[in-house]
Image (cartoon, rainbow, N blue to C red):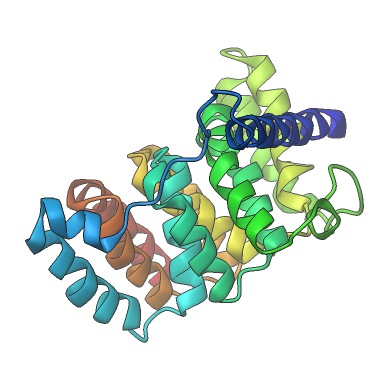
Length: 268
């Protein structure tokens, strides 16, 4: 089923090419507007809400982003995941660029967008293409620096995957056999094995997106998987702090009982 991921990657690439064509036509006076959302400056924010501008510069940038419980790179991973998952393009150019400044590789940013095509929908991933393309072009990043559709995969834990697949088949094989089959073939035997994101970071992206989109029922499996993949409890806790500011307090408070239960069960 690797051809399915190749189709997804080709779709993302085609969208990026279409965006560049629109930008070129607009610059040449062709009358078509750029597909890239204009970034919102702090001056723009201050002209509408001085209090929000002060909060962003003070509490958010000056305090939350400086908290030592999570590396700046990981905060960027979480924030990028939220913006893509919730289709919030206004902040994407600035946050994508900041993520690269914090040490995220272009290949990793590309892979996050691909991953979220499956966990938050193809449309949300495609909506992130213009901003990512804008940042890549500005920094001279070309396709050679990005993960290919095919290639080597990480080793598969056959026993763990067999147990996961058996459980899903037992619960839902009659309900939606196609979903069950593609979950195995596309997600867990291909997407999750792509080496452009280490498993810990792929799990971080997944959990952040699940919380941000209110998919509480899916959190226990993926939070446990994240911690099995190396995410610490302290980092998982701080993930919620970062998410409170970028996905909102209600989504975080809806997720906190699930996190509490997972933490308690893992503690024995």
